[in-house]
Length: 199
Image (cartoon, rainbow, N blue to C red; front, top):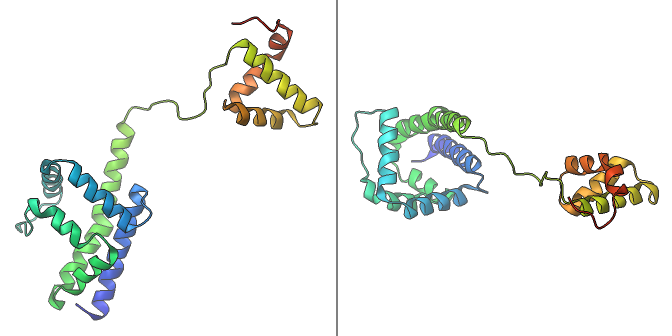
């Protein structure tokens, strides 16, 4: 395949490759394909079979499969880089160009958006797990006393604004800013208590 149709098809293919890489956070298409091949190798053939059957269910076609599922890794090896996938397209007969372009447009404009919408829907149904930020539990009283002393020193000695001093201590201790602010609100309690008392 050559000429204008080849350029259109390569452009569609590059757009699909970029969308796939972005979807999984891969740096580029080659990284994406390395992940796909590893996923395929680390699971049984039933994973590929299940994907294939689901695709056939969603997008039925009267045509038979041209590639047996047990040869899936061989096919991936042919297209695991952008250059290799363009060579595959270049080897296609010119009369196949309309079908190839139609298929790539289907993938780009229908299949990928559908897959994204399905993934978003599945994601909405997953249980929400709290966390991911800094710890929000108030530490023991001696540690809170020390935090309050450090904030007071930054305010009085260094002339920092309260919120800036709190941010510095949050960064230093690894606690969240909100936890540091809660400790600072109770500073009278922490600074008035004897140094050896604990909660």
